[in-house]
Length: 500
Image 1 (tube, one colour):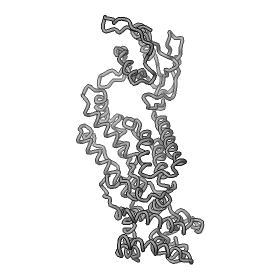
Image 2 (cartoon, rainbow, N blue to C red):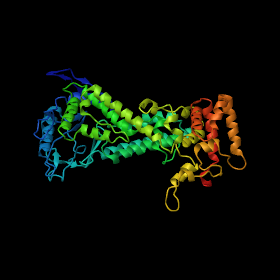
Image 3 (cartoon, rainbow, N blue to C red):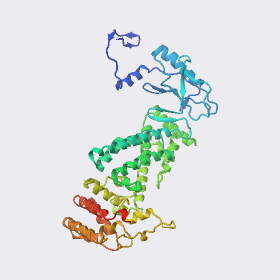
């Protein structure tokens, strides 16, 4: 095929080329944008206005979208047909020598009570463009349902995230068990991108949609740690350093706001951002009002959005810090639950207002290398074990009342309550004395590494503070953590759920 290059009114010499641009070549979109730089359809009275600027079209390479307003009760497509006809006849037919594909084109009326009687057509009315209830543009899924226009978006990307989760854990067929540090890296590389795609513009205002993302995130963390669905949520984030998806979305949205505000004033993103602030001040729904709602719905510690702070970089940075503190306080308060006494914040090196100290990959997840031992320790910490203090919490008395803690007795009859500390350091165990022997062996190893004072702390009576502090000393110690993991594994085997 012969080609010529035109620059203004001048043409180059003809040249032959046996190769075109390969499909998927990164230069293809750039060349198409350059070829259609003069595609500017005429204005319409139904155009969307952005600070008095007509938004005639949106274009992403060869994907073009026309946006026009119409009456929701009696929708009309006459203006859209006019624009489509001009694009096909005037631009594609006389200037660019392109064709509009009816098969690849769709029409969606968002919020319309009914469909128009007439159809959109191309090729002089010979090809009809279909009406659809959903469509996708630049990866964002839209619905014609004005009450929940982004439900398809959440559904689609949650499904892709679940597929990524199953793909990650399918590798256990070959590697047996994924180490937790590796699993966290795989989460941020393969799963998190799906859960945050488009979150900077699609604000979480629908609880049902957001829970699809949360369910996927929680499943991944529980599977990685070896926990059951009833395990407490706060501990998952504190152990793995993976932030809750609600707080992560809000922080990314504020980061996007900071990006938009530093753009030049004639930049479309800056215009859209300032327009959203103006709509908020006029009590109209906008991106800012949705962000305010999302921040207000943060669990336990909502953040109040001051629109004045949204007008400067420093103000947005202040709001981002408030969201981080809200996340830290939420997880800190979750750990104060009576369900997880071993993870009570007073025993951990964390601060209630410090995001960096709360979300840290815990050291013992690296140092305990045998998967079964690591899982036993995690289950002990996260109230996902077989001890009576947790298992009888899930059951009821014959009259339907809750079984009180003091009634969750040790199965071996040597204490009122079968707790984590009791099973590790005080219980006599079965009659053969095997538990006492294993404890003695473990204490001898602790004595050799850390001395008598730590052994005495483990055996303190009347107060659980000493033994729990000893547990965290074990977990932070490079040599004692694997030994403690083996000991916990052996102890929990002596408390099977079938014996309750």
